[in-house]
Length: 615
Image (cartoon, rainbow, N blue to C red; front, top):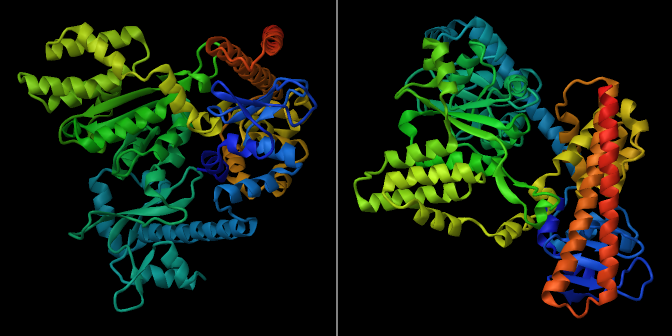
């Protein structure tokens, strides 16, 4: 969680705004005389569920807690960040500390790369590495894959790596921090990896973050990983992602296996969209990496793992990570959009007792067939749950229903949900309508869905993908697009980080100058947008993409405004809010028509632009 998100989570906008203006309760919201212009009738509203504010009067301003304090105090973003961080009790990272951490991380990458080169050289040339070379031959790993993945060998020595890296100018404490050497009980240090096949683990950018190491004798554990460091987090990285990301984008599918050898075999046989979770249950961080590349994910699981709790936890993580709020008509998701699985999750069931690398080496065609025959997530849940139960027993029929109904209740498509209810009814011998009634009770209500979505800030909950795509275009193609961004307004960016980046971009000729002008809290977000992969495009295609983004962001803003106004009107009418006088309701009604008119204009403009692009 970023410092901005943490501040928003800890602070209530109502409390902050109350320090500056006198708020009156108005239904679920609060109102006041606008602090930014003179008025007699309150038109300034604060929305606690949304954690936002908006003036429906003459100034028409709005935003989040950051924009309110910035406008009211007349200070910039950095000053506001520090003011609110102090109030929220959030510790901020200073620019000096950030530079030190960046330098330390860079040094870790360098020492890991030096170690990888040393291990690789030994595997290719050292006599002692023959045992490792024989192991790779038995596993059918080609010389090309050995070179491509920079596989290596660690000698059966206490300090061979240490001595080599010290001779290259690295310091002993750097080797300890990198996890390449460990402290001995009697004092001093020793190499962590000894007599093992070395497997460099690279991040998305292709930098060596850590190592996996397979024992070549009876040593335990069989596989040993680098300890967690500033650049290596096993739960936040996927083995092979640096080499697989292009194929994943191109094929629109990521396949996740368990082990290193599975990835090596897949890539050797031309299946480059395969990555490994390295023996751990799938984590949210790992799924987040995949989501940036594709919405289609398949997990290769041993048939013996069906019903295993760790496996089901990993699948549940994937299911939740792929479930996103969805807009319904013009209703913004933060006002109650429903949840739908925005992606295709499948499970590849392997033959019992076989790993993917065995299946692939024996028959690449069989591997492809298994992918084609993969199960949908819901089918797998049925398979996993029922395989552990004796459905001839009433108690276990009840257990099956209790375990499967929560999944079925969240299926958005009514036809699909009915099909799985029929299937469950046949399995447990209960009437379908009984199960349907229970599923309906399990399904979150509109109010609960709203509460769940708005419990986080909009940026945190939704990620603003359109805003981020637009910024990536601008950051990566400033020469082509700077003169074409005139219609893009800071008000179009709902996310605090996105809005500040856009404002800084307007006055910065390149990314480096932009970075210097930003608060350190925005560095990570900036780097992720600059590094985001965009499809190749001509200058005209880039201009069309930016124009489309601008139009759609404008539509989003107007829909947000219209929905807020309609909510206030509906609330006043349904709750009989006497304080919201008739004249004010009529004013809001009149203003609600303005976004409708503007939306119609934007829609017509979009149609004209699309027709022009087709000519």
